[in-house]
Amino acid sequence: MPEQTLNVFMPVTIMMAIAVILFVGALAAARLLSPRGKKTDEKVMPYECGEEPVGTAWSLFNVRFYVVGLIFIIFDVESVLMFPVAAVFKKLNEAGNGVYVLIIFLSFISVLLEGIAYCWKKGDLDWVRSFIVNKNIDK
Amino acid sequence: MNTTIAEYFLSFDVFRSFVSRISLWLGTDVTPFIVFMIFLLGALVITLVLATVGGFGTYAERKISADIQARIGPNRVGPYGLFQLIADGIKMVSKEDIAPKTADLFLFYLAPFLAIFGVFSTFAVIPFGSGITLTDLNVGVFYLVAISSLVGVGVFLGGYASNSKWSMLGGMRGASQIISYEIPVTLSILAMVLLSGGMSFGQIVGSQGAFPHQWFLFHNPFSFIAFFVLFTGALAETNRAPFDLPEAESELVSGYHTEYTGMRFGLFALAEYVEVFVVSGVAVSLFLGGYNVPGEEFGHSLAGQGAQATVFFLKTCALYYVVIWIRWTFPRLRVDQLMVICWKYLTPIAIFNLVGCAVWLVVFDGKSMFELFFHH
Image (cartoon, rainbow over all chains, first blue to last red; front, side, top):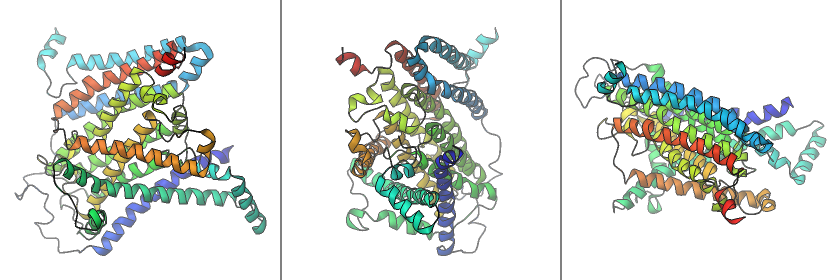
């Protein structure tokens, strides 16, 4: 029933709309009630404990953050792919295909394990990357 | 089984005949309108309740921390300082809204919205009772994991857009921490999806029972460990101590929301406290039996729904207390320790749990430890 599907997702839409309204409402109330003084240079300066900021904060950052992001993408996509399997696993087990599905499931997880083992060995899971580990791999 | 709160109310004959009588009187079918009104009212009530819970979270935090440190805590506004959250709200609203001159204004204003939106949208699937779940999506857990990731985006954008070094550091840490800990949390949730055979909260809570031996926490040794993995990950995802590096007040002033003032800061704080309640609620639903009360017939009645909601709130508040307790007990971790705990301990353990649950399901045919020990 298409109408049924709409009904099920309607509260989600309503909840999102309420979140938007709450946000706009809270800021509108703050706008009405809060004082708006002159924006002096000191007031609109980024806070650096009273010192004048030197340069911008949009500068180089530690490459570890980027590596963590990359590892996350891989794992997140794999866990998303495992959700449908997990959802039907019990049903398939009750139908008597448990061992068969388990083998497929485990072989899929082993890909994930391989990924984490590679990153571990490569030293990408350490925040301060050890180059000794790196040398061993290069040999 | 009800899939939405509207269907629960329409399952009562009295209510159905009431609706059909109005339809007859107006000469048109008003059921869609009634359904919409139930959704709207339900959503408003849940928002109100959870926003108040979030407000009381700040009060509870101070009172409990005071208790732990042998202080009195807020006691000036109202009896026992109970109206402190109203005073705080008034203060937030009446503070000047300042944005740094060099900030990226669009992203600066967008960030608190993402935090609020990510948290409040999850209310649609939180199971307060078998009937009073706003909507029991068949992808409920998945939806919750997906949409609550928006908070991490908000944290990062807030830190980036401020163009302040403290905020930038806090935002970077926050982003890497939140995305890292999402992996063990998702894998732990996955194990419970596997055990219950469905992604909807109704299915997951429904396959547990009212008594501790029926909970997924004690289903098998792997799910027992999975609970602690999920709880640790949830602490990190909500930036709670000992994982509060994004806003580490002793090193980063206030982290990603250093530059936020007044209501924009207030919205960030509200999102954080409500999110703690949401993740506690999810942990309760997945592992601690959720809203289950004894008696199936009783559970369907209105009184039963009240009892279910009470049980859910009591368990969730108990977890909330533990979260605050942990904050005032453990020292903060370093960034490298944080990453090591996530990637070298929690993630492998979570994968181990997932495999363990799958094997357990196949070997023991879905029976829990209790059933194996006492029903043979």
